[in-house]
Image (cartoon, rainbow, N blue to C red):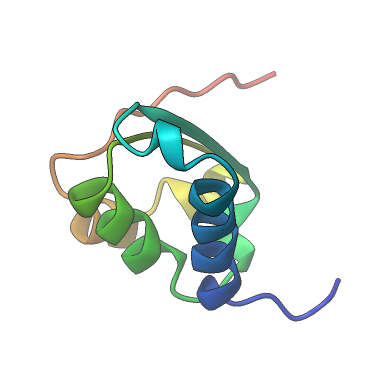
Length: 85
């Protein structure tokens, strides 16, 4: 896996708005899978949740996403659903 940082995530969102400036006022739906592998992802998600018109869906490894640290980093912004097989 390549090194990936939250700065690159911010660039992806900026590129989207650059490509579709007419949608800046529309709700954007973001889907991140295995985002827990990116250091500092919680702060990125919290920032865009609080400052942009977005709906965010995060999926990934249960043990990393369901930790108490996540609940602390994203208070009042989470909904948990576990599909355990």
